[in-house]
Image 1 (cartoon, rainbow, N blue to C red):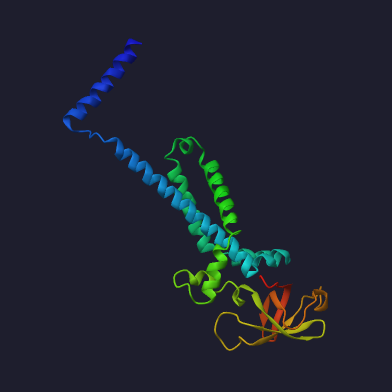
Image 2 (image 1 turned 90 degrees about the vertical axis):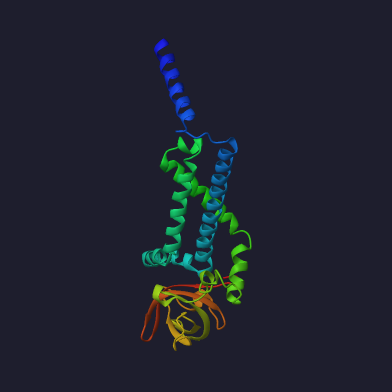
Length: 243
C-alpha cells in the first residue's frame, strides 16, 4: 500500500513540476466544453446528412421504379443491383464510418465494439431516412427539379422518372396496342437523340397485353433489352399517377 501511495505521489509531483516549468499548459474548463459542443454538433450534422442521403436512395428506388426489378427474377435482381447509386452509397458509408469514429470519443461509444456501433448507427440512420420519406421533402425537390427550379441538387432528381436504356429501364406512354404480344410506346431514354419517339415493345412470353389491362394512354415501366426492332421486355408494370 505504501509503495502504491509513493508511486501516486511521484506521478503527482512529476505532473506539477511539468506544469510549473511550462511543459504542460493548463486548459480552462470552457475549452473542453467548447470542444465537446463542436464534437456534438459535428456528430449531429453528420447523422442528419447521412440520413438524408439514405432517404434519397430509398426515394429514388421507389420513384424510378427500380424496385419493380426485384419482381422480375434473377435478371431483374441483377439489374436492380447494377442500377443502385453506388457513388452516393459509398459517400454515405464513408459518413457512417466517420460518424462511428466520432462516437468513439464518448464513453458509450468507446466501450462498444466497432461492429455493433456500426450496425447501430446504420440502423438508426436507415430508420430516420425512412421517416423522412413519409414527408414531402424529396417530393418537393423532385417537383422543383422537374420545373427546372432546383439549380444545386437538381441533377440528382431530374432523371428519376426517365428511361435509362443503358440500365435496361424504360418508362413511357402506350400509344397503340398491336395484338396480344406487342404495343407501341412513346418514351424518352434521357440521351437527347432521335429515338426519343415511339418504339415497339415485345411483352414477355409468359404474359400478354390484356392480362395487364393495358390501354393506350397508360404509363408503363419496362425492364428489357433494346434491340434493332424494339424492346424485348422480360418484365412490365403499369404505373399509377403517383409513380
